[in-house]
Image (cartoon, rainbow, N blue to C red; front, side):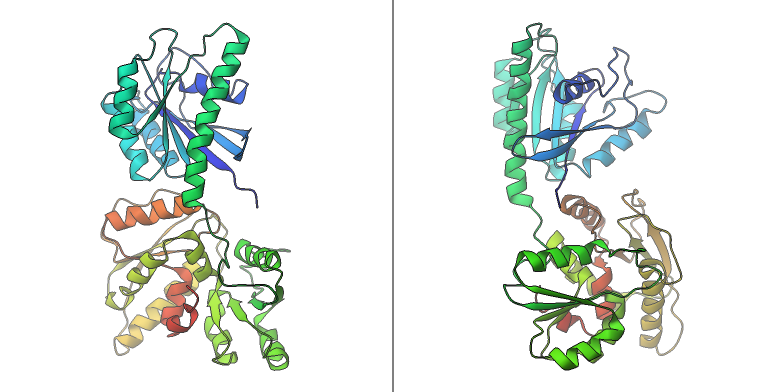
Length: 408
């Protein structure tokens, strides 16, 4: 799967963000105007960057927008920061003040690489001493840029220079933050991996869910054998092929059913747990899992979905996990009902500012990037909210977490 990198353009109003986007894209993507607040919602443009591949340039509203809707626009700009792989911080007139430092702090807090661009340098050239100071204090590369260069070749060279710095920053970021494949370090050549995929109302019509597709591709890339079947077909397959099975990966919601079929010597895990391993926050989930037994009557639990979808009576996040968790806590409480208040956030919608959640339960995160998922978990950690993911929750409630975490 080709990854599309997101590059956010940030800065105050009227420093040349939209002009910069238009120059990089080679066409007018954003409206350019001397009036503050011209760019309201984020504007996105796809382009191909050598050595990197497809990238989205995202033009954002001015960080100092004080218009009537300015607060909402700045809020939207911050939300863009949660999903970018790189930030370009645009400033002009050699003014690198509190707003620029705030933007830099916000991006660095998210571990996002930042390139500083001094725009409108035809009006006020970049102060070399300032550039050296920014490099010394913040480790920033500072590029001088102007869209008003009349010579076509000089303009081309300026854009190429800027792109070369973007490539430099992104290559380092990619090397340090690249997601592992879903079965990285587990599957090897000639292995036989059985994938148990329920087909119910939650399964997409005519296709598999993304983690299942990712697992099949990873198995094939390792010259191994992928066997895909429904839960009701597993027992018959295991009986005939028990000696050749290397690993079984199942949808979390049929954990118990699958675990009861498999002999103890056959390793078992789930797509959701493998996603947690590939995406990175696995240890945070392990710590958060310990809070499940501490839940008490009246507690609030936040359920986080990374995509938006139509919910059904078989929805794992909105129906099955709340039902099983409530049943588990009630049984643990001697049969006295324990009522938990569940709240749900879909897609990358903003997480409520409240910090009185006793636990957050995150889906596998197949529809978001590693960086987006880590930023989301980081937000919860800052508020002291423990977090676990779907698959690990179901494994814990079923008493089989020790078995299914064998490979993580």
